[in-house]
Image (cartoon, rainbow, N blue to C red; front, side, top):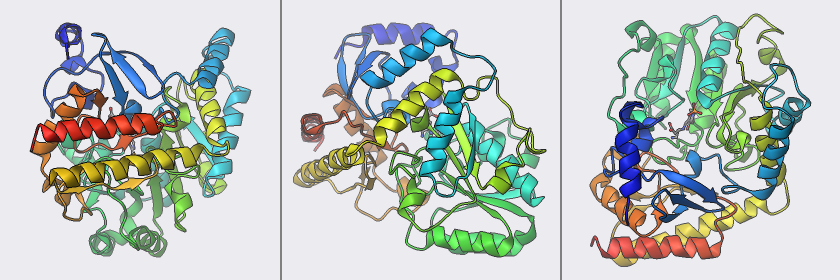
Length: 428
Ligand code: KE4
C-alpha cells in the first residue's frame, strides 16, 4: 500500500502538534510506521488520503457503533447545524438525551452531560470525595479512566502503550491518594480497605477492562467490590465510558446484578461527537452545582451537535434487532478468527462481549495486566501490520479493545477473517 501522502502529512504535523497527533495512541508508536491519515468513512469502511480502503475496527475507539456516516445520524446533525451549534443555554435536546440515558441505566436516576470521558470520571471522583468527605480512591492496574491527574497512576490504554504508568506532571501528593490493586484481585482490595477503610471515597472500576486489551471480571469480583464499598461506606463507580450502550443498552451493569453508586459514560452516547456523562442516584447527583455545592461546569456541555448525534444513535440502538446484529457480527468474527489462528497453529485468546473484543496471542488465561504482559506482543505487532496491508485497520496497540458496528455485516466479517488468514500465513 502507498502511504506517501500520510507520511507527508505526519511529517508536517509533527512540527505543530506534539507527536503529530491529538491523542497519543494514534501515533502508531507501538506498531511502527506512519498512521494512515483518514480522509473519510462510510459504514464499516474508512479511506486514507492515499486512497487506501480499510475495514475499520477502531470506530474512533468505540463511538461509531452504527458505522461511519449513518444516514439518520447525519440527517440529525445537519438539522442541528442548520439551527445553531451552541447556545450556552439549556435546550430540549439535552433533556431528551438525559431521559434516554436514565431510562436505560437502572442505577442512574439523574445525569450530567460533559464533553469527554475524562471530564466524566474527574467529576465523578470530585462528587464521591464530596459525598463521603474522604480523599483516597482505588483504581486497578491497566484500567484507564481518562487523563485527569488522579487517574494517571498505572493507567491503561495509551499510558500503557507508552510504558509511562505514572505520567510526569502528576504531583506526588495527588498520586498518593490513588490506591492501586490488580484487576480481579479482591484480596488486594480488601487489604487496601483494611489499611485505609475510613479514608477511601470510592472504588473506580471498568466493569469490563477495555484498556489493557479486554479483560472480563472474574465471577464474584464486581460483587465483592460492591460488598467492600458497602461495608466501608465508600462509593462504587462503574466507568462505562467504553461499555455503556456498547455491550448492552444498559451497559455492563445491565448484564449483572451489581449496581454502582455512580456511572461514567462517553463514546457511544455522543454518536461520534465529543461527549461524556456521569450519573447516579438523585441524592448523590443533586450535590452537583447549581442544585448542590459540588462545582462542575463546561462551556459546551450538552451541546446541540453531540446531543443530536448521540440521541439519534441511542434511538436507533433501541430498535428491534440492533444488538442482535452486533452480537451476530461479534460471534461471527470470533468464530472465524479462532478457526484461522487454530489452523495456523498460533495459540490465541479472544475475549468478547457483543461487538467489543480483542485478540491476545497466547493461550494462558488473562485476568489482569500482568497476564497481558506475558502475551506475544511482538507477533501481535506483525499481525497488526499484516492486517493493515490486507485492508483492515485495528486499534494500534495490544492494549486496546476492538469494536464492530451494525454496518459490519457477514460479508465484512468474512473479509476480516480472510485478511487474518493472509496475515498469519505470512508470519508462520
Ligand atoms: P476520553 O476523555 O478519551 O473521552 O475518555 C477517557 C476514558 C475513560 N474511561 C474509559 C473506560 C475509556 O476507555 C476512556 C478512553 N478510551 C481510550 C481508548 N482506550 C480513548 C482513546 C484515546 O485515548 O485516544
